[in-house]
Image 1 (cartoon, helix red, strand yellow):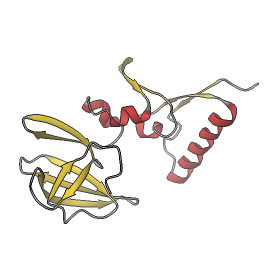
Image 2 (tube, one colour; image 1 turned 30 degrees about the horizontal axis):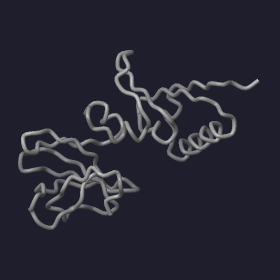
Image 3 (tube, helix red, strand yellow; image 1 turned 90 degrees about the vertical axis):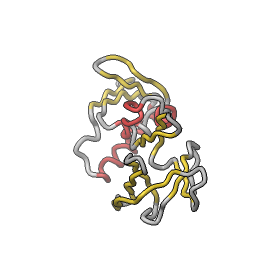
Amino acid sequence: MEPDVLILDEPFAHLDANTKLRLLNYLQLLQRTRAITLILVSHDARDLLSLCENIVVLDSGRLIAKGTPSELYYSLDDEKIAGLFGIVNKIALNDKSVLFRADQYQVCTDEINAIPLKFVQGHFMGEYYLSEFCTETKETLFLTDKEPLNHVNYIQINHSRKDKN
C-alpha cells in the first residue's frame, strides 16, 4: 500500500548540491508517476519553488500568504514574504518604496530615467555574479548577472518576468 500524502520536514537540509538535486528529481518523479501529494516544511522557501504547485506561508502558525510558486516569487507587495524566496531590493523612488528582485533591472548607458549606482563589490556565485551597489541615497542594492557588473553606473527597474537580456 502506497501513501497518498508524503510529509517531509526539511528534506534538503544539510545536503550537498548534487544530492539535493537528485532528491528533488526523485520527488518530482514520485509526484508525476504515483500522484503523491507532497507536504514540505522548509526554512529555505527557494527549495519549494520548483517542486510545489501551491505554497502556503505560515508565520507563528498563522497563514500569511498562499499561491503558486511564480505568484509568490514575483509578488513584491510584502517585503518579508518576498524575501523568503530570494534577494529583494528596496529603494525609495519618487517618495515611494519600490521592491524589485536582483534580476529585475536593465543596464542603462545614460542617466535619463535611470538610477545612478556606485559599484561596491562583486561575488562569483558559481552560476552567476552577485554585485553589490550603493545608490546616491546610500541604499544598498544587489544585482545578479552572468557577468561581473563592476562597469555598471545606471539601471532601470524592470518588473517584467522575462529575461532582461
